[in-house]
Image 1 (cartoon, helix red, strand yellow):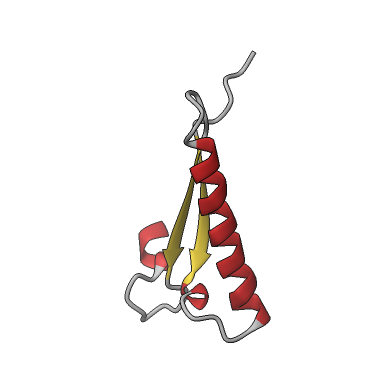
Image 2: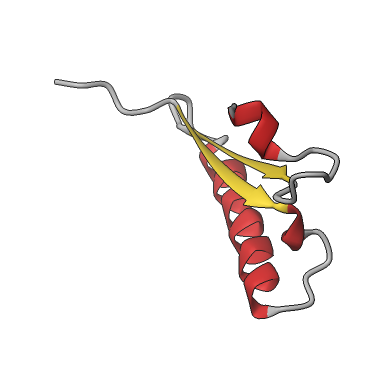
Length: 70
């Protein structure tokens, strides 16, 4: 039997910083939900971690994920 994963990483974008559209707002909500679940899971001994990471999605922006993935 396989062991359950010990962590899940949610990759978000810089649109969630100060959302001005439905797209940005849903990304921000997903980040907040992930953080809330992680806080709830932290109370358990063998719980999975839920991690939210935000990257820029514009090629020339600081923190752009494209060079990191290349």
